[in-house]
Length: 87
Image 1: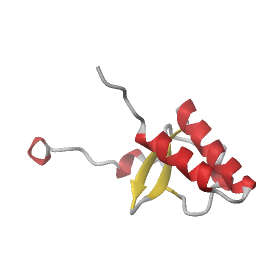
Image 2 (image 1 turned 120 degrees about the horizontal axis):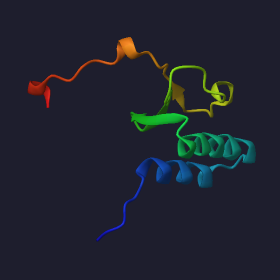
Image 3 (image 1 turned 120 degrees about the vertical axis):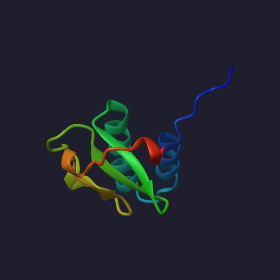
């Protein structure tokens, strides 16, 4: 059986390793840690990470978002239902 690779974690680790500024690498590591802890979900839009809290409420790291990252809020009203025909 093959290995499972978390491509989001892999891409974030690649971003960390490509940073020239240690403070930027530290910010991305903080995002990666929150991802591993399950505090945030990460999607990718146009090759850039988009962060969203995994639960309603304030994520503790919103003020420390690395450059190139974006944030979206958690609002259950904005999440649409999938129709069987859409799948």
